[in-house]
Amino acid sequence: MTLNVTTAIQARDLYFGWTEDKLILDACTLDVPKGEFWMLLGTNGSGKSTLLRLLAGLLTSIAGEIEVQRPIGFVFQNPDHQLVMPTVGADIAFGLVQEALPTPIVRQRVEEALSAVNLEAFQRRPIYALSGGQKQRVAIAGAIARHCEVLLLDEPTALLDPDSQLDLVVQVRTLVKERGISALWVTHRLEELEYCDGAFLLEQGRVVDQGEPERLKQRLMQSEASTLDLS
Ligand SMILES: Nc1ncnc2c1ncn2[C@@H]1O[C@H](COP(=O)(O)OP(=O)(O)OP(=O)(O)O)[C@@H](O)[C@H]1O
Ligand SMILES: [Mg+2]
Image (cartoon, rainbow, N blue to C red; front, top):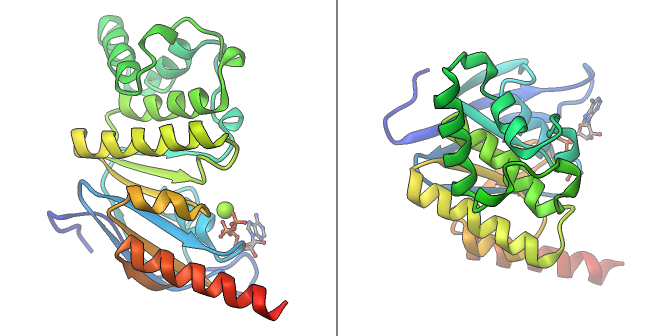
């Protein structure tokens, strides 16, 4: 399978399980168009993180096909699992080590990436002295510095307060629209849906609905309401 020119992420009939008797992904299929910001919704345990890890190449499927534009940037729910160096600038530069770039280019990439997430003034700041939202923006800057085509974000706002949550979703939308990056963002928070171009709904490891964010939001609100009625 090869990516067509308008698709950034393509997954066809993915199957995955941790044990032989239970499938976590079951014929899971999705396409994220280039230059768009899509969200992935689903209840706890529906397979969202597993799918993101497969797309990033961190896990291997039993069957199915995956094509993702590279380089890929991955942003975890907890930035403390991702940022490894003592300062902001050093952390972003560390992500470039494999590319063996000349020092002035590394410096330029770090500065440019920090300015893309509005953290220019934070280059020398120790990581421990950042807020959760700032840490997530440093993680995203790491991906920008590597010139990532695709950003995969697994509940990046889960640990943030409501203001930082909103800042982050707006920031990613801006990056997608200004830089032509494509993003897939996992969330539980329905209020974030209004910032995306489209959304997928995952149920028991399969995409059961996709498209217009507003329609999916209504569908989820109704199903939440009916669950509450039953309890
Ligand atoms: N390392 C693992 N070993 C065994 N089972 C796992 C492992 N990681 C996840 N699972 C199981 O796989 C299923 C899907 O997990 P996954 O983390 O993909 O769900 P999710 O949709 O991201 O859920 P959440 O909304 O809670 O983050 C769950 O039943 C989970 O218990
Ligand atoms: Mg998850």
